Length: 333
Image (spheres, rainbow, N blue to C red):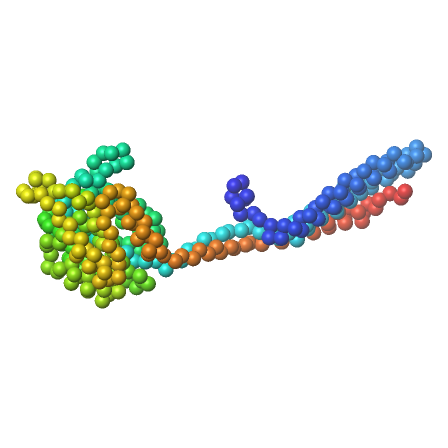
């Protein structure tokens, strides 16, 4: 029944208004028949005995002729079985996320809304997850890095698979120590280079300075610019945050903000520094607004015409009514 309600439609429903005079005609005819029965005199009883069958046939044939108008009116209203297909095309943006998983991302200098300590990686993973989920029309890939880069996902529209892979990312996934920002940019650039997109961007998330890799961050940024790639750099962590003594004997803050600003400047991107969860969320909201995809939604409607069935039933009912009326004409007044 639900499928019938969803798919059965009238393409020209204004014709259904003709059902009103049709119903009035049927009701008025029934009223006149009753009155005529009362006006017959008792002297015509003998005559009526022979015409009883004819009158019964007429009482069926004439209403049937009126009822034949109903499917005819339905046919004029063009009943259809409608299927709607929704298509969406998008001139999406290709995005490569370079995500830092060095041990310094374990610093708990962020806080949850209820005041509990939160590590940088946990805060960043939640915000990046929401960013990916909010951009279904964009092809997105991911590279994680510490002392070397590692591909988590190629550039893809399968965000469910991407997010499932990203969920498994942790600080122990790579064994190499350090922060190879230049290598991460180069790895992300190589994945975007083979793509044909109107816009290609890298979102570089890091909480440290580059101290590993075979290519410097500035050199990698210059190569990315040649490929038409824009880089947004996001520094994560507070100014007071320090690596624990279990990781480094002399704890220090490794931010290299001037280099991150330079990377963004070279490629025409922007630089951000998020020192709490709210700033981190606002950073990705800003990037989301700056890099908008253009999408067009189209609805294709396919109608299967059903009026022949109604025309056929109307013709059949009219023929039966005509046959009954022809063989059994109404009695003379």
